[in-house]
Amino acid sequence: MEEAPRSKNDRLNWWKITLHCANPIANELSQEIIQPHLAAGIEIHSDFELSVYLEGESEVEVLKLLLCPLPRDVSISSATILPLKNWVAESSALHTPLKIGKITVIPVVNEHVKRTPLSDEVFVIPGMGFGTGHHATTASIISILQDDLVIELNPTKVFDLGTGSGILAIVVARLFACTVEATDIDEAALQNANLNLGLNKVEDRVRLSTTPIQEITGTYDLIVANIYAEVLADLWPEITSKCRKGGLLAVSGISADRLPMVTACFSPKLPPSQKGMLDGIEDKCEEWVLLKQEHSGGNFGIPGASYHGEGRGAAVKNPTWVTLLLRRL
Image (cartoon, rainbow, N blue to C red):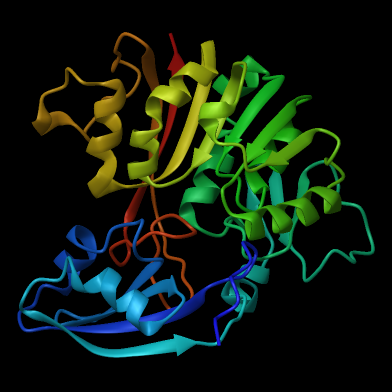
């Protein structure tokens, strides 16, 4: 009997693949070999053992993904399918209200909330979409959106690249009288975001879509993105073309070890030894000026994994994250 074709809305299985290293290279392996497009997260047990979390339809499929990049002194100890759960929602830590500047993020169980959020509150249902405010990358970008430089800009058109749960789009809509174009490639995340927009009564000002940035038309006063450094670097030309001259770009989700690949996009003339060690407002190139650079720390995961950003992407345990605010010249 032929297998029925998978619907685009079907979610793949979550797998936990445990790797054993003959030498103490687990941390190096997590940084150099497990790429963000491959693994959803990493749990480092010791210098000799780590577990990789990723999605795949079958054990054969996920093992094929891992076998190609693994060095000879690394072996697969086990491959376990995980129960299909909303690991984000099940984390009790993510149900604690969090105050970031004048914004208070309040996680709620579902859309049936008895009251309307106040003007300085954001209700978020912890779901499959990235962003509850509890990870350092999300909190840092929410904080920087309240910076005087952004307030002085007073954006009216905003683009949220990789919106996830929609939290940044909602925060921007809370802070400014603006419209927001919010995109994500994950339809499950957009379903979560749609619920959150309704909870916060901003669905009339935030438009959700899966439209690729290459197909987005027009320019924006402010672009926000909490995405991997690799994706940010790849999309830099498109991001530049979508930000109007004088507009701002607020980005996070950048681990400190991957900062150079981002700084190279807007500071190509810096010596390699100085990339990732920027002085701040003095650092300029032809199209961008770096206004602020903030560092923060924190982990997030499904079940127990350390994540790059708050969604898919491997990272070292207890990483340092970087948030940047730039102005388009």
